Every structure is written in C-alpha cells, then in structure tokens.
Image 1 (cartoon, rainbow, N blue to C red):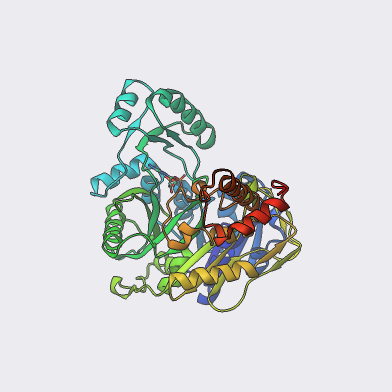
Image 2 (cartoon, rainbow, N blue to C red):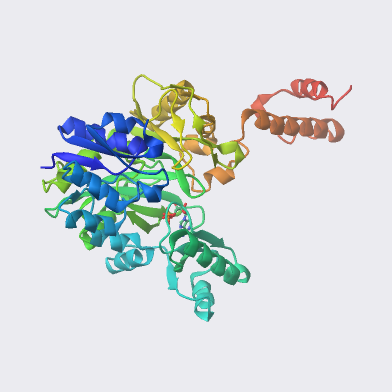
Length: 500
Ligand code: ADP
C-alpha cells in the first residue's frame, strides 16, 4: 500500500488530493513554485519542497525537479492532479523508472488517448461511434474532397490540442484552405506539433461525459454521466450530474460504450470518456481524459464515491471498492467554477490580492478551494479559484440551493465570475435543463450585467409603447413582466421619450 504521496500540482486540486490522503492515513508532500510559497497546499502537506521559479516550465512542469523532490522525501507515489503533467506519458515512464508509482494509467494508455488521431483510430477499432472525420497532413485536394464528403460546416483540430485550444470552425469550402493554414501554424506554436485533422461540426451538441474506474484486476465500471455543456471558449464553467438531457436508455448505452472504450486500451485508473450528443441523442466519442477531471466532485456527490481514494487504491494494486451494481445515483449535483476573470470583458483573467472571502455554508454545499483573506492570485496559472458544488435530492432543489450559495459567496478585492454564474442560474434554458454548448453565445443578452440588461429592456419597452400609440398595434412584447400599458407610458415619460 502507498504510504507517502507527492502531489505534483497546486491550487484546489492539490488540496483535494491531500484531503483524501489524510483520511487514508497517507503522508503527503507538496511541491511549490516561488509564486506559491504562501499557498494553502504548502502548509497543509506534511512536507513541502520548493521546485523553482513561477513559470510552469520551471516548476510544475519540470519533471526532473519533481522526481528529485519525491526521492528526497521518500515519497513512494506521485499524484499529478489535472493539467500540468497529468497526461504526460514521458513523466509516467520516468516515475516508474525511478521506482515511484504514478497514480494514473500507464504511459501506453496516455499515449494512445493523448493523441486525438490515435484515440479515434483505437475507438473505431473497438466499435465506439466517433464524430465523422478524417486525418489530414497537407492542405491539398485530399482535404477539400474529404471535407465535401463529411459535409460543411467542419471543425479543424490540432491533434495534440487540449483545453479548448487549437480548434477552428470552417463554415464553407471558400474559407477552408486559409483556415487550414492558420490552424496549422497555431497548432505548431501552441503545441509544437502542426498536425491537424478534420471533424464534422455537430450542430448545437451537448457535451456529456462518462466517469470510469478500472483496476489492475480487469474490472472496469462506469459512474454515470456529467453534463458539461455550459462552456466559454470551449471550456466548461458549470457542470451537473446527471445530465438533464439524455434518456435512461441513452445513459446506459453511453456507459456501456465507455467501458468498452476503456477495455480496448487496457485502461487502469480513473478516466473520463467525453461524448458529443446531438439533438437526436446520437452520441459520438470526442476524447478520453486519462486523469481526474476538474468536475469530478459532482459525480462524487451523487454516487457517494471518493474518486481520489479509489485512484490510490487502484494504483496500490488493490481491487476497487465497488461493483457496477453497487453504483446507485442519488439526487442531483451542480458545480460552478469560481474563476478570477471578468465575464463582462471577454472573460479576461484577473489577478491581485483577495481582501476577503466569505464561503457559503449550510446543508448540501461543498467548496473545493485554496484561497483565503489576503491571498494574492498569481498571474502565472489557471484562473480557477474554487469549485462550488451543491447536492440536493432533485435538480430543482439543487438549482435553488446553487442560487442560495452563490448569493452567500463573497470574494472581495478582485473581480470574479460569481455574479455571472448567478445570472446563468436564472436563464430559462438552464432552468429547464435544455441547453447545449451554444448556451453562452445564445444567451448573451440574458447574461449581461443587470445595468445593461435594464437598458436593453428599457429600449424594448419604450419601442413597444411607441408602436402601440403610433400604430395602435398591440405591443410588440406584450408580456414583459406583465407590465400594463399605463406603466410603460409612465416609464417612457420618465425616460424623456414621451412628453404627453
Ligand atoms: P479539448 O481537448 O481542447 O478540450 P475537445 O475536442 O474536447 O477539445 O472539445 C472541446 C469542446 O469543443 C466540446 O465540448 C465542444 O463544445 C466543442 N467541439 C469539439 N468538437 C466539436 C465538433 N466536432 N462539433 C461541435 N463542437 C465541437
């Protein structure tokens, strides 16, 4: 059994992993960059090692420094969290060469699934439905013909891409070649690999994923699904479990297929198979993440499973704790990613000193966080500050609870997206559970800050009133807040549009 775990990460995920270690009586080692000296995970761990300068390449991505820290502290395992080295096959190999257990799958699974083309090929061979597409190496005739066969619009993707980067939507043939060259040069500069491939662009899809666990004894189970369609820049910000969209039959079919996908590559550990699901509930393999996902807590809340503990047990060679029949969902969970960013200014990341944090409390709330009063948000890393998760017996109650805890959550000193998340909770599509990956772009107006929304509504009301008095038409928008005509008139007068 693993006795000491080095967590090769920072922020909330470092805290998350160490919390499970503590409950299991496993010692912990933190690594940190110079920018993270005052970070919570450094104080929480039993030991901590500084591994270099703030830039990720000098610290959290510096493989030999991290292995060195593990050896120096006699850690017998490394948990990579998500991001950084979590899907780096070379690092997984380096751990095993140094006699350290990598808490994750073997490098073979990481390699196959890390490359979007080899992952597609492995899935096609295993009979898993994939998004129709083709691989391309140059922008010649083959590309044009291939795209015609797939049918426009198509999406160009960097083979080595991730984190929502390196994707380009191509609406028609006329813009194909230029977009292809741009995608290639972007892929080269972002990922050091200019390989690009083409996929059919699925109109208004849902992003729904299946959580998996597989142990070294050949057992693979799924822990149902998560709906992750609320995305900005192809990155998730709100997730829920289970998906409010798919039927029970489709849910079961997706679970079975995901297990098949994992078995096809001999997968071991926790992993997630991501699917795009179209309006007809047809689902297509998108990719497999060979690590813990940011949004794993919603699954934990609904299934009553600690995924980190299972990861550690599996890495120790123990059988996992559950059989498929024992996985019974209970209630509903929603997660909001609290980020240091300005949603009303193109989601630009913000940084600075947090003056005060007031965490929500009470029934059904979980906060995976690492911030505190006086904490300085560094500019070098991801903008996520915490994950706010609620659980309740039904989706409706979970939604009401999320509104309440977002109301209670106060972070001062820096701009965050809390207010924006509050607005999401009131948008009709979200409330009804009928939203796709286009949710944010389709609801820009409803998601505007209150002041601007007020302006838009004001203009609409005045226009409707003028239309009424000039044309004696029934108002264009008769039902806004059920306002009677007399109130609109008064309102238009107040605004100086009407003098009578
Ligand atoms: P990454 O690896 O960068 O996260 P993914 O391939 O997982 O990229 O896709 C991220 C998101 O981009 C999806 O959740 C979806 O919103 C959108 N997307 C990706 N591929 C397609 C597609 N073929 N059609 C429509 N949307 C897509």
